[in-house]
Length: 305
Image (cartoon, rainbow, N blue to C red; front, top):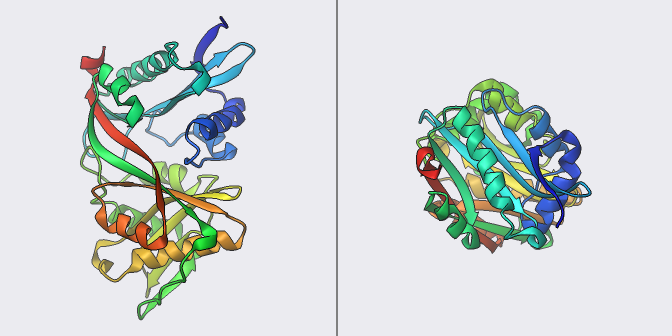
C-alpha cells in the first residue's frame, strides 16, 4: 500500500488539483491560475488554508479548503469546501484525514460554526462528522450552441462589459445585490480589499464576457463569467433590489453567455439554491439542464471532535 501524506497545498499543486476536480466534479470550473492564486494569496481576513492528500510517487488524490467566512454577519462562522478524493482512492480514510486537517485549521481560528457542501452520496459522511443538511443546491449545464436570442433591453438600459465598469462602483452594486442571497447565516458586505482579491482579481474572471446593465450612471444588474478554456462558470447573476422585476437578470446572463460563446466557449455551468426560484426560472428559460445535486450542511465544531 502506498504511503499517504496530508500536507498544505503548494502553488505547484495547481495543475494536479484542477485535474483531480475535473475527474470528481466535471461540472465545476476553476483554472490553474485561479487555484494557484487561491493557494498563494487568499483574500485578507479569510485565513484560508488548502490541503492536499498525496500518495507515492507524489500523486495528488485529495484536496480540501478551509477558511473564515467574510460574507456573513455571524462571528465565528467558517467553511470547509471543495473536499474531494479521487474515485480510485476512496474508502481508505483520506476524506477523514483531509476533513480533520481542515477542521483543526478552523478551530485554531476560533471558528465555532461551519458550513460545507456534500453530494447526495457524501451526506452520510457529513452526518458522521456532526453536520446536518440545510439547503439543496442544483448544478446545471448549458451547451452554448443552443443559446436563445438576446431579449429586448428595457428603455434606458445599456449593456456593457465588466471591463468598462469602475471597480469601486461595481463593488457597491455587488454588495447591494447580495443582501438577500440564500445562505446558512445572515449575509453582510464583504470587506473591500478581501472582495477585490476574491472577485475582481480572480484570474478566471472574464472581463469582456461578464456583462453589466447600466441605467444612467447606476449599475442595475450584472452577470459574472469565469472562464477556463472552452468552459465557463456563471459565478453570480444578480440585480440590485430597486431594479428588480424588469427581466434584467435574464438579459445580462443571456448577453454574458453570448459574449462567452463568441470567443470560443462551448458549455456553461452554474449552481443555484433550490429556494432561489427566480434564478432557477431564468436558467430554465436559457435551456440549462440539471447535472448534479449537492447539499449545504452545517455543524457546530465542538460536536465534531
